[in-house]
Amino acid sequence: MEKINKIYGPPGTGKTFRLIRRVKAYIRTGTPYHKIGYFAFTKKAAGEARNRIGVSDKKVPYFQTLHAFCFHLLGLTEEQVMQPYHYEELGKKLNIRVNFSDKYNEEETHFLTCDNPYFQLIGRAINRGTTIREEFDRNEHDKKEIDWDILKHIAINLKEFKEKNHILDFNDMIECILILPTHKMPRFKAVFIDEAQDLSPLQWKLYDKLKDYCDQIYLAGDDDQAIFAWAGADVNRFIKEPAKERVLRYSRRISRAVQQESQIPVNRIAGIRKHKEYLPRAQEGLASTISNLGQIDLTKGKWLILTRTKSNLLEIMKELKNKNLYYQSNKGKSFKVGLYNAAVAYTKWTIEGVLESREINEVREYIPNGKWNAKIPWYDLFVADQKEILYLRNLLSTDENLKERARIWLSTIHASKGGEEDNVILSLHQGRKVQKGIRLSIDKQDEENRVWYVGITRARNNLYKLKSKKKLKEYQL
Image (cartoon, rainbow, N blue to C red):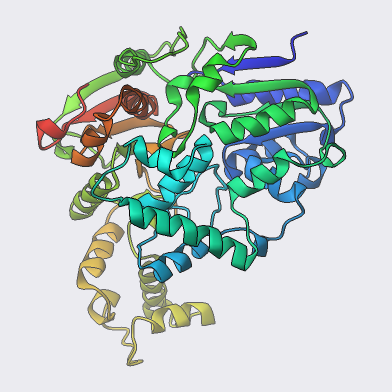
């Protein structure tokens, strides 16, 4: 029996299901839970894996992210770990802007989720095992955004900041594990690493160490869905890693039309790629091009709207709001939840004349003068942004249940990985910055094609390609 097993899982082929089934097989044959390591890309994915096993978290101590594995093995506390607010604090000191999409590090992904190009380049250099000078000289960054002297200054200050505050970042943790004495490393019967195509060279070193402390190892992923090269991920290592390979052949997600459309971007990949043939669902589905959102009836059905850039996402959010449509994104619901709760409570009071203390406090926030009047509707009395009041009033007049998850979900392609929906609208707008970046190298172009493959394959049944307002800024599908 070969020690290393590699599972290629095209979209919807049940890659995680196969891994969990193999985990259960080990458990049935007597392998103790603590002898199984299951490492997922995000905290959410690790939690889902634990739930599928059906035991308490304590019983499966190594069902976690690689981040959490290093954290617990080193016996660290939260105060000893570099958090997003630390980067923001350092950013203020150095007079540079730092924003995080995962501000409280809830997902515990391998990579920084901040949008600051300096911290991104420093993190990418460490992930790739290069110096910041070597990473800078690769010229994969926007030259208008990064100056070498400033980069060097920030790198020095980041190192000093961590030393002064006695804190480690995720990459520091891995490097500590790499030199950890043998007697402190846990020994596994089997190790499972999901989304292995997104491991960086530094994380592959951790994999190499884990390999020495387990009997069997299972790598699962899909090189066609490797979209984190911008952060230092090494998809080529995943493809080249010697192993007993298996390609999952049947997708339970995508229709024929969606699969056919998805082959366009992956067939453009010029670098190394694992050729994979898999069958879609029997449903024919639909793949069509639209010029604007008005060509689709968004008042019914479930929708996932995907964009390549955050700026394009904000544009579409604004358009949906103007159409009085209820939607959600990773940032929450499209309306002000506090305003909604207050409006519902106030309306209840005008009818019943009584409220709970919590509801009273919610209403008070929007009636600062304390003059309640049951004869005046909330939208004429509340002190709030009039556009928000009008938008919420229009939403309340529809059949939408605003307490439930919205039928329409908006996301960037990168943030949608792992998601799926019956109907997907894929905005083909790339933008100047993305197009400029992909001209830098063949690898960048390959990664861009993979991004669009991921976007297309979020669709279960129907794919609608939304044309860009400017054809020159459009990905050609």
